[in-house]
Image 1: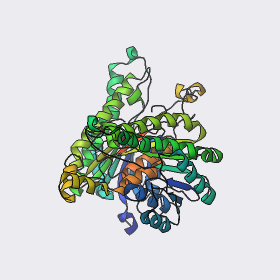
Image 2: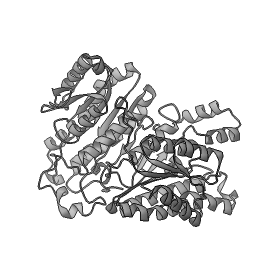
Image 3: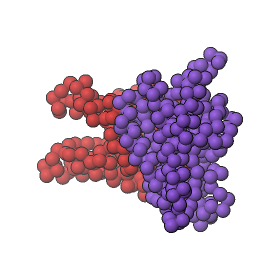
Image 4: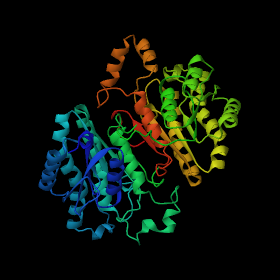
Length: 236
Length: 261
């Protein structure tokens, strides 16, 4: 590792193969962070990347251990891995429900449990969960997605209160519909009639979400249990 | 400022910023932070003072004293900024007036002065800067609310009402002005280390350090905030690359509220 690389702080970002995770990784690298990207698919643009199923605690623990060994102590973790799925509540099977919760809530829990011991030893760190505007306002056919993202909000606030005394800050970003591959081309969130209802008149961009994430890690040193809402005015 | 990159954040080169309540404390810090980002900064406070002039000189900006509760003075001071350095691209409404006491004992004139300054002053300022922002087709308005505007506080009815009113004003203006590229948001600081703390300590009859410790005990992070930490949130909301945060309240309080405002 070069001297320059050694001076850079290490952040783990999940969901870095595309969308918000990829934009967050790029923004953080541009601000001097070394980013380890976790995703089901490769994230070749990151300094370090690992194919990890965030719903599997063992895989996550092993990947975090590798990052700590190869890059050094982890100062920050951003849980952006996730997926979107709309279903009427009567069509949400137990499998749909469990998968939604295990990826969004489980993924955040697995990441936090794996990085917090190292952060505690180092005297501090910062964790950001990506939740959703739908966690606040809900939406038709969003029952399991909103339940998972809403659970994240409560989790973030509790974990924030619990870990702030050890110098670990936990916060969230709740984007509105964002222009990523997660939104299908025929998604109702891309319909001109929906966009016309937004004060901003357009989708949120992944780069805007990334700016919020970077703020919470770099400069939000008195933000604890807070949620930033880049949502184009969808929920005010 | 993000470490390692060496670039001030955000990029406000060529932009004109007006910060009210800037003679000391948080307002002065916002002015310094945004000047360091390349902006030309006009600093306002209720009266002309050595502090205000010194800050303007330090930042190569201009001092525009005036009472923001008076719409005529607000129009005049915004006009001065426009004539001397150009239309205001960014308004940081940081001014505040405060008195405390039991609700039924409040002097009505004093009670209304809090509302007229904190809430009314921001109304006058937004009306005054809006034509310039419209001419430029973009703008950023950052209103400093308060944790007490979210939670309320005994003995601070006027102050809390004014700060909660600012939150609703910001939500409404956020909706109303975003289609024109004018983005309006609020920052709600928790307890912050400013000269106001000395006033609190004196009235509680304890030392400044004891006062800091009393407040810190109620904050999960175990300490009170600093002005640069509040200024950092203001800087985020002045980033012209970020338009998707609209009508929101960014709470910077060490974890004391942990709720949606």
